[in-house]
Length: 70
Image (tube, rainbow, N blue to C red; front, side, top):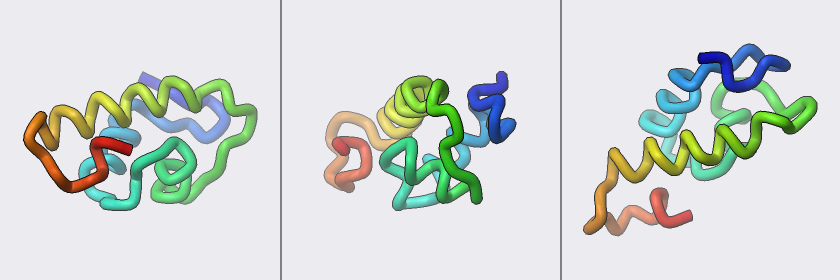
């Protein structure tokens, strides 16, 4: 599904950035990891939700990495 129509980012792109980039803890960091920047900002809330979901699935409750608690 297209999450950001300005940059043509999909939910898969956001999940991939969350899994592969240790610095992808925020919507801004996801944009940076994917080589773009926010344009209109309408997608930021959705990106944060996808990022939170992806990190919670990856890390789990007993994680101490710091990425999933940001």
